[in-house]
Image 1 (cartoon, rainbow, N blue to C red):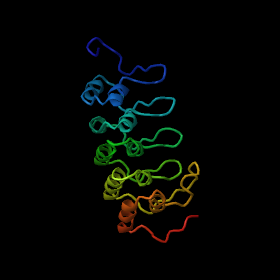
Image 2 (image 1 turned 30 degrees about the horizontal axis):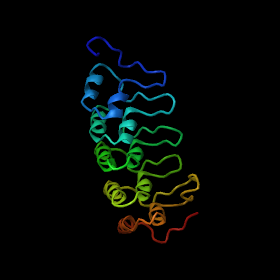
Image 3 (image 1 turned 90 degrees about the vertical axis):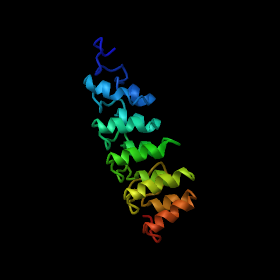
Image 4 (image 1 turned 180 degrees about the vertical axis):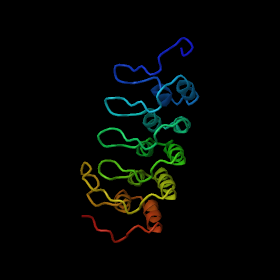
Length: 193
């Protein structure tokens, strides 16, 4: 198709460009070909601001995430009304999350970039059951996630304003993550506002 002159910057009626296909389905080998043909690695869908990197992160395609990042995809570009970063998307992607999180951290994703309410990827990891939640929390803490970061706006009534990751992990019953956060010097006497 590329040799026949297919327009790689064209979008569907929903704003989906050619770069979304390898992101959605994990075809990392197609990303360099599309970039060589002048596809925009960060072209976002108009409806929600999702980029190919966000899609690859949500789908759990670590190799595609790495290739997109190495070709200049913005690893910190948020999307949607909640301002989800690719790293937050990755934390929530299910079993392949750890590999995607590691790929984004290797590409210098901001480990403390929160959503509109201030919740960072570490908050997300604190709610995920063991052993996946612990593995994610460990990777984020190793990358210097802020254990004192607070939620500064209500989140659908789930985590109260003033919560820190330690509060969320304790409420979720994730004892292993609680122990990690205490080892990282989270404030055991923190009081929510």
